[in-house]
Length: 420
Image (cartoon, rainbow, N blue to C red; front, side, top):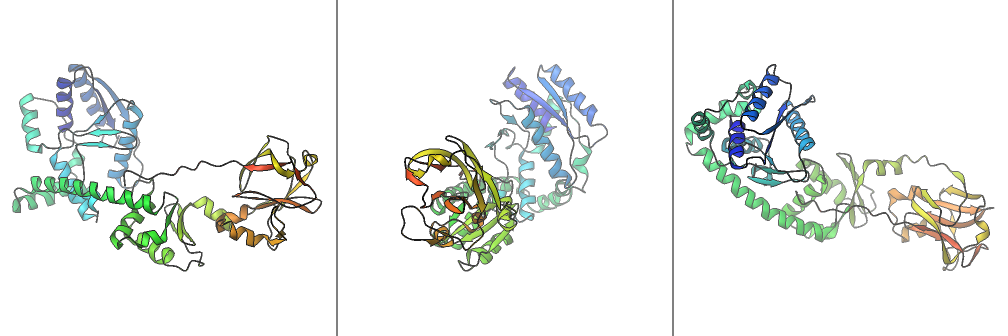
C-alpha cells in the first residue's frame, strides 16, 4: 500500500523522471502476479518498470531478503539516481523498538532517516512523517491498487510480531507512542551526529585504520575508548563487533605486557600489540607469519630496471651512488630465507652486527620478519631484503655507481570510516 502510494505521488510530482523496480523474492506463490500488478499500474501512469527476481539465501529470512533486495537495487541504480523508499512513521518506530530489544546503541536508535547517503547509494524516504492510517486514507481516496503481503501478518517474523502483539498493547497504554518514538529517534540521530564528530576527532588523534596508539587511546575516557575501538574494529564491515569482543581487546591485548605478543581474532582480522601500538591485521597476513613455508634457498638473476616481487615487498633494480658491482647482473645469485643467528656488516656501519638486532632497531614488525631474505654469492652476503627496503652489506662487491634493489612503496589505503 505505501509503495503504491509513493509510486503514484512521484509520478505526479516528477513525471518522466522516475523508474520503478519490483523485487520478486520468490518466497510467496503469487509473488510473480504481484509483479504483474505493479507493471500494469506503471504502464497506466507512464513509468518505466523492471521486475527483478532474486534468490534469498538461507539464514535469518528477514535479513537475507533485505540483502537480496538491496543487491537488486544496486544492480539497477544509475550513478545520478536516488533510491526512494516508502517507509513510514510506523516502520521507523517498529525498527527503533526492535533495535532497542536487540541491545543497540545510539546509532541504532536513530533508526531511519528521511535522507541518507551510504557508500554505495543515496536513499530518500519522503513518507517517513506519515502514519500508516494517513497512508491508508490517501490510498482509499485515490483508489490505488495494492496487495497485502501475507508475510506481514506472520508473527513468526519479529517485525510482524511487533506489529501484531507488542504494538497494540503499547499503544493502548501510550496513545501518543508512535509520534513520541519518532521524536526520540530524531533526537538519537542528533546525538549520533555529535558522537560521530567526537569519534572522528579521536580516531585521527589516535591513529588510522591500521593501527592505534595505546598511550593516546588511554588518555580518552573509558566510554570514548570503547566507541573508538568499536568503530575501529568494525572497519568497512556492516556491523560493529559485540561489546564483549571490545572488552576482550582491552583486557587481552591493550593491557597485555608489551612483549607478550598477545593477539585477538575477530571477524577475519587479528588485533596485535607491538610496543605502544595495536595493529589491525588481515587474517592471511598474521597467519602467514605463524605458518611460513618459504623456500629456504633459490636462484635469482637480475638486470637493470627489472622488478622483483618478493615476500618482503616489490623491488626494482636501479643504479645508485654506492651499490653492488655491475658484473653481478645476470649472475646466479643466492636468495635464502633468514634462519636466525646471522651476522651482517651493513654498509656505512662499523663491524658485524647480529641481523636480529638490526631488525629490532629498524622496528620491523614480528609478523613481517618471516619475509626477510638474504642475497649472497659464493657465501658472501650482498645484502638483506626486508619490508623496510634492501640493506646493502659491506663486501668486496660494493662499489661507487653500482646497483641495488630499490623498494617500491606500496600505497596502502588508509581510511577513516565516515559512517561509523
